[in-house]
Length: 438
Ligand code: NAP
Image (cartoon, rainbow, N blue to C red; front, side):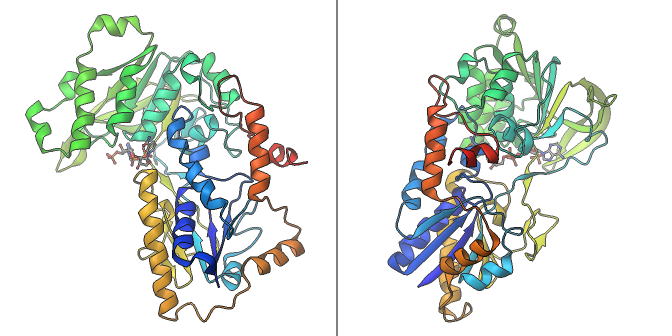
């Protein structure tokens, strides 16, 4: 019998569990730990609330969760309630699938001003992550600036731009919907330090900006290269650039019909955030792209900003006793292997890139690595106590474990509390989640 502990119940965690099940069948017991009492990580608190079809992938994870030898162990913080060395004693393999939940910092003056947020906290706020539910961003100003030209920047801009009706069928939490309903934001500037050929936005998501009820996207035609130059792009990026060309061609009378503008400001590198206690502006330097890099031109200007959300990527949270690559912001690893018996997968392994589906091959190839280490004898001869040993430890520590069955009860309560047409109203604090089990 092999015992595997997976830390983190998001896509990377569940695909790894699925791969382990496929490989060992009856001969494996997998425990999936999460610090929250609820599973699915990024699917629940990262994927945008108006992208419900993407969230549907959790049904696949539920199938894995309901197999006999995989269990969910919620409400356990690894590194605090139980340490990595303790888990390594109990399980043959410990897999860190903890994602990248912390914001990369801009490293600019004024980053600490009020109403400046990283995307982890801002997305966590509208998605009801217990850590960020109390963020309370001030949406009373007219100008929002979103820094970065990736899909997260698109999510944030779209959520800020949508009308209440456009959230029908979404699971945006009520505190965010209430705040957005009274928002005064009129311009949302997406600030990119490079140009149209360097955007990280995928075509489907970018195309959504052209379909919004009260907002229209604006691209300065002067920022676009000659159309013939698009031929060298890979097909996905070429489609995204085609959307930008479409946005650049939107006539003024159409812009005039929409009260909110989403303005792409490209070749524009933020240099500082300024304001008296609260952010009021972003100082920007024009750039040119040379050999793929943004190079400052010395030409600067000031962009008004009552709210700033920086969407420039994420870092993994270090865990005591686990080697960490500070520069890359992820666990130090060789293709998922940190040490024999200790592994990482998904964003915790490779950094915050790729789609949810990228985590599937990642999980499967990690299980191959574990098999290699077992076959080479690097993990010993087995005979570890696995979940039985963990349960004893948890009992001595008085840990309040949450099972998958418990989660289904939390889910039922969330479904019952949903606004009309919405799939659920999430609990946004751990106490309420646990209280719903009494
Ligand atoms: P991302 O795709 O890596 O984009 C980050 C953006 O931030 C880039 O445009 C980057 O510009 C910019 N940036 C980085 N440092 C900067 C700085 N110091 N100043 C100004 N700009 C800076 O990251 P992401 O948007 O956080 O997305 C993370 C992953 O999740 C991606 O794989 C994404 O596709 C995925 N995701 C997918 C969906 C979806 O499919 N619906 C939704 C959300 C997220 P440079 O290129 O110049 O560095």
